[in-house]
Image (cartoon, rainbow, N blue to C red; front, side, top):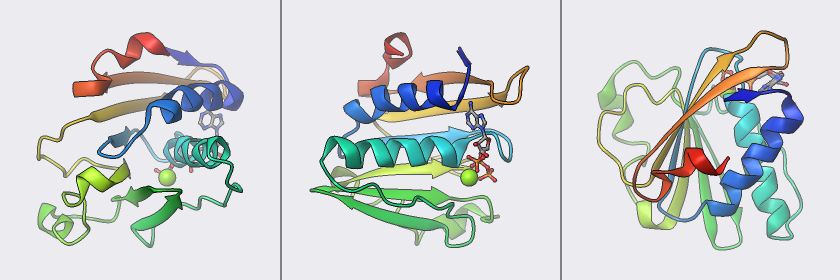
Length: 150
Ligand SMILES: Nc1ncnc2c1ncn2[C@@H]1O[C@H](COP(=O)(O)OP(=O)(O)OP(=O)(O)O)[C@@H](O)[C@H]1O
Ligand SMILES: [Mg+2]
């Protein structure tokens, strides 16, 4: 589908964040600068909003690899794996642990080959205009038919 603007992306992110819960994975796939961090920022800020918590900054984890957010009893782990070159380097980042307690949002997940439950894969591409993007969605388990909901 076509995302017409940042505002439109934010509306889509609200539909996602309302359904987000412990155990979910969100994989964000697409070129540099296409909007992966922007979408994550909307997701986290909307979750904070929905829970009556003050919105925080959501910086890109390009250099830190991971930033964490506590939203009531939900822990969000936001990864950017762009700088990771070998799958082995993923072992110590907690990506495969404590799934039942956290939501993991992962930019540049290309090296992750392990099948994961409750994964929502969002593919972003540039559109015709500056603020336009194309998104494709593939979900497993609870997210299976989610593309029809947005
Ligand atoms: N419809 C849109 N959706 C997403 N981003 C948009 C849109 N329109 C404009 N933008 C702008 O595109 C930029 C996206 O940058 P962002 O850092 O989110 O990309 P990224 O995919 O995380 O890049 P990187 O691969 O470097 O991590 C932002 O400046 C954002 O404001
Ligand atoms: Mg980013």
